[in-house]
Image (cartoon, rainbow, N blue to C red; front, side, top):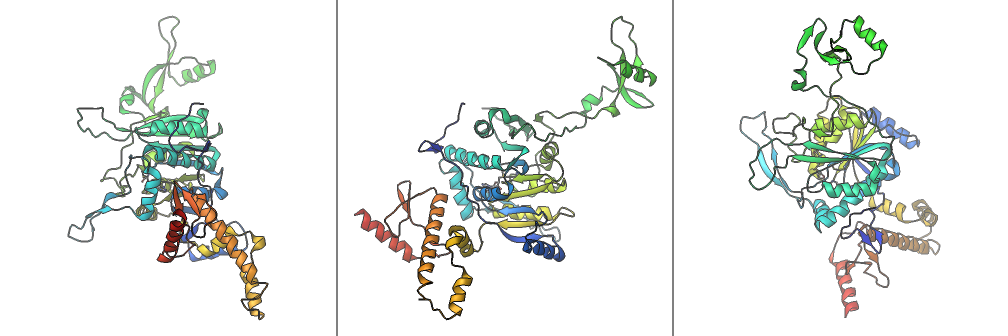
Length: 492
Ligand SMILES: C[S@@+](CC[C@H](N)C(=O)[O-])C[C@H]1O[C@@H](n2cnc3c(N)ncnc32)[C@H](O)[C@@H]1O
């Protein structure tokens, strides 16, 4: 099959795959849950029973969030909509405005530049560090993980613009299969006429649609007729507005029924079809096609405006959700922004999971959801502040060799001291194993190769040596200086 190649797609003859290490989620906040419900949930959790579903707003990089969702949600997400950053090379800073306070007389609106945070800078380097090549690798890895999360009846909508949509199509074909590409939707996002003398005005975004199997959900919807079309219904009787239309192919039964209703007119010309009264109120509406010109961009006057610069209209998401999902289905968006997908899912009784690495995006989404009357309880989670030590121990040490804290405590309580000959070697080997597994994990995350024979140097990447600091250790001069010393001694 024809394939798009970018620098960094292959390493040692193999495609570079996304990180697939699941990290534990930490719930920072549960919103809108009564104390009674919380206790009941805790109780069920303690008894190992399945707890009630909670929608999830996750603060984190999709690179780690998506693989962390896989153990629970692989093949279970019914609808995915993503609107990844596609403003080539744009970083995470933008101008934002804190709106005027309606309770005070003075004009208090304030303009500020939202500078990118450290994690956003890191993500920016991942995404655009090597220009289009790194973006395509970043995009490819996202789509691979999303495919694994998508259910058999699921559909994925990928929102791009003219700069990236053609590359995006080639990647989607590669990941989902050429035959599973459903269509492209052209959304005429803007009708602003900015005069250009040197090129065509670009007013559309492209939404690429792919499915996993032929079992995908597709509920037909109907839009209201245009004023132009309604003008055809120029006659009126006691039933309503109508015009005469050819019956076309008809059954005797249908003709009899129409005749009885007094709706048929037989033509004088021999052989011509009879005509019947076609009423406006009997039509279901227009089936939308793939060119959407009736949904306008969010403007500053819109009630849904959150002042998030790349916010998409709720009407866009509502159309997608109504067609490609059912009530109670699970909807995922890993680039939440202002939270449009979650807000529309909430209002349409779909379950949702959304994530974003920007603090401002999480804040905006949370606030927006709270403004929805009767919003169902949801959790705000992250991957960051997990009890790192516990996580490191449980993740990086096979349980067969762990000496549990209880066992160590029991030995100490029964009079053994720390030099107890049975405990000390075990503890030491526990630690060594744990550190090794942890270091390998970090090297893998960082795409570095492990190296042997050094104490302070653990890996190599792009001709640079890598030192992995211990979990939770503050960066201080000690490991840095020791690392430097080893490096100097070995490169003389
Ligand atoms: C175009 S905006 C999404 C706008 C959204 N559809 C809406 O209606 O508000 C893209 C979002 O992706 C987020 N983002 C960029 N890189 C990310 C990453 N690696 N992981 C998670 N979110 C990311 C940005 O912070 C930004 O909020």
